[in-house]
Length: 235
Image 1: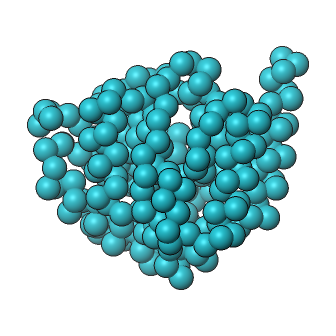
Image 2 (image 1 turned 180 degrees about the vertical axis):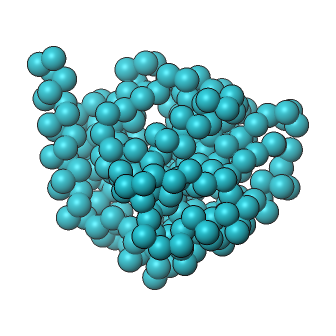
């Protein structure tokens, strides 16, 4: 793999002051062991705590949203930065210490080797560590994603995703909340991107359990996706 291959690690964050420095330092330590050039970009989505201060202390570049705009908007901001700065790949990961840095690096290597445009880190290919409630919720939303958009993946809501330069240049979505995870797959299909999955570990601490989505929020996600699908049928 080329030393000149540039990777942007994008971490959308909202009130993640207690852990974001640890997350940034962990991914930096792992990326330093690779043959990639890299940058870590934290998108602070209108946090009211010290997320920005802690992320900078960890060595990240921080892009601040003045107002909380939602996970979809924060992710779009980070990927837009990666595209504008001509990165070869971008990786998104959660800010709550849920993902192993080695899974992030492994995803880039797999995407590069297999020429994949959108590679999804699936927690459900090996769901050890996930609660039954989260497994059920994720499987349900993945089924809805398939029913509405014809995209068959095991973990449509995963925050760990690898994007090729082609995806960075062409992939866009319209929703701003967590429903963007499913809409992103739909848009990727529409523009004929190469989509694949790879297994990642599911790491749940008491902190990440408290920060994560609950299954009741899945109802709102489904409503938003159905509304979006209907709107575009009649456009």
